[in-house]
Image 1 (tube, protein in one colour):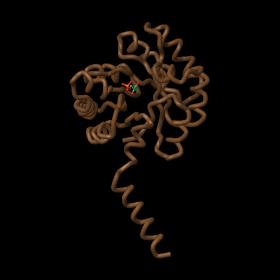
Image 2 (image 1 turned 135 degrees about the vertical axis):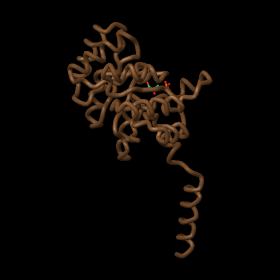
Image 3 (image 1 turned 60 degrees about the horizontal axis):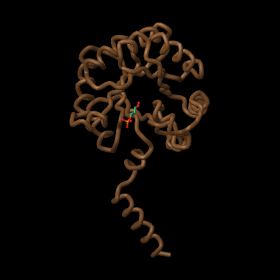
Image 4 (image 1 turned 90 degrees about the vertical axis):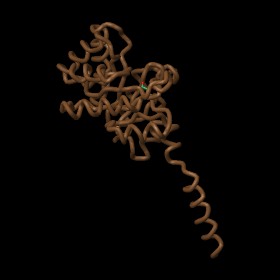
Length: 213
Ligand code: E4P
C-alpha cells in the first residue's frame, strides 16, 4: 500500500515529502478553504513539490460544469487527478475525462456498488471514506475489504484509496484489507512513527553511551 497525504497545507506536504514516503496528495474543498489561499496557486505549489498524483476536486454539480472545471485543473500540471463526487453527473464527467486521458478520483464513496459503478465509468481511483462510515456506526474497513475483493475478482485496475483516515489502526487495516493507497493527514503519520518503546530505547541507548565517557 502506498501513502498519499490528505491536506492542502504546503508545509505538511513538504515535511511528508522529505520523509520519502509520499506517492501523492489529496485535497478537498474543505481542506483548501481551511488554508485561505487561491486554489489554483496552491495546486501549482503542490505539483511543483510532489511528482505523484495530486487530487483536485471540482465543485460543479452538473457534468458539463465538472468537465469544464476539471479541464482547467488538469491544465495546471500533468500529475493533477480530477476529483469528482459519486453522483450520476459525476459518472458522466468521469467517462468524459477517461476519453480525454485525464485521471479521476471518485470521492464520497460509501458502498461497494458505488465503487463498482465508478470503476466501470473509467475512474482511475475510488475513495471510500472510512472515518465517516465509522462515525455513523458502519464499518469503513469492511467496505475496503469488499471493494478489494470485487475489484480482484473482476480484474478491475481502478486503485482503491482509503480516505477519511482518522488514526493509525485505519492505516493498518486498510493495508491488510487490500487498499492500494491510504490518504493520511500529517498528524496520523506522526502518530504512526511514535512508539513508547522506541522512545525508551533511544533514551536508554543515550544514557548508556554517556555513562562510558
Ligand atoms: C480525501 O480524499 C477525503 O476528502 C478526506 O479523506 C475526507 O476526510 P474527512 O472525512 O476526515 O473529512
